[in-house]
Image 1: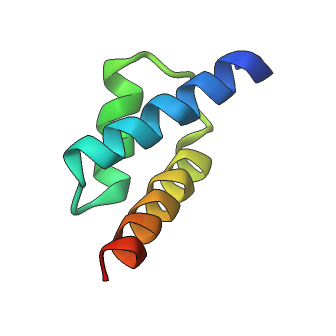
Image 2: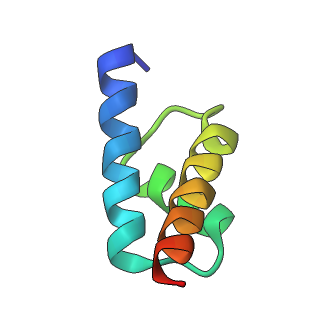
Length: 62
């Protein structure tokens, strides 16, 4: 995944996290990777992006 494409994937995933507010970040990323044909090996990193975004959303709501 190229750097530019990688940043676009992360930003897209952040936006989708804000929209859908997934309960299970790992399953959400797994479905995202499958649906958008993202190369394997990035699930851990993308899961941390989702978890971080959910944490930001929860801290701003409280």
